[in-house]
Length: 110
Image 1 (spheres, one colour):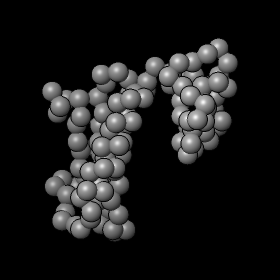
Image 2: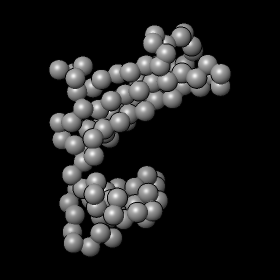
Image 3: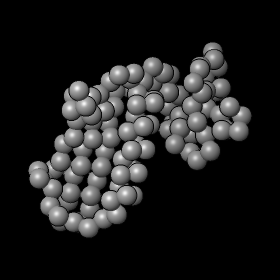
């Protein structure tokens, strides 16, 4: 079921009332869920944690998934992967070649 595959935790529960752009929030959450499903463990659960910090008046949303198929190779790349995976204009190849340098390419090269 969706409650098992996509659990939601709020802190505090229930969340207090606050003003925000609901369309923007929905878009950002949907994009994060899409990426979690695309790059995480196939069929794995994707947890959303929403935390409101009343002291700092901030809302934090974390979308957490189980590591995907090539996670171990990305971890082995260390800081290089951290720098490139989330860099604008780069994406992870959907297939790995023996050379780990080849897994991160510019979008125009794929």
